[in-house]
Image (cartoon, rainbow, N blue to C red):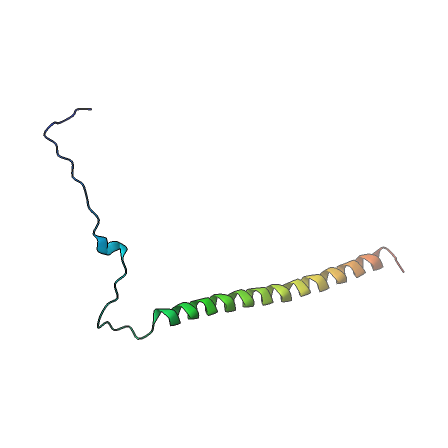
Length: 80
């Protein structure tokens, strides 16, 4: 590894605008960010509720099928 005494170190400065929010004046946005946030949360809750509901119905079908299989096993064993 050789060191070059004439080499200069370049430092990159970050523009302070990159870390700050600035609203755009005269944009074409038709919906506020708050409305979009509420809609996103509502969509997530609806999807979650739908998944839980589907899981509940699937579990009921599985439970019913297990009951049928247990009854069939009991009949096959000659139980009363």
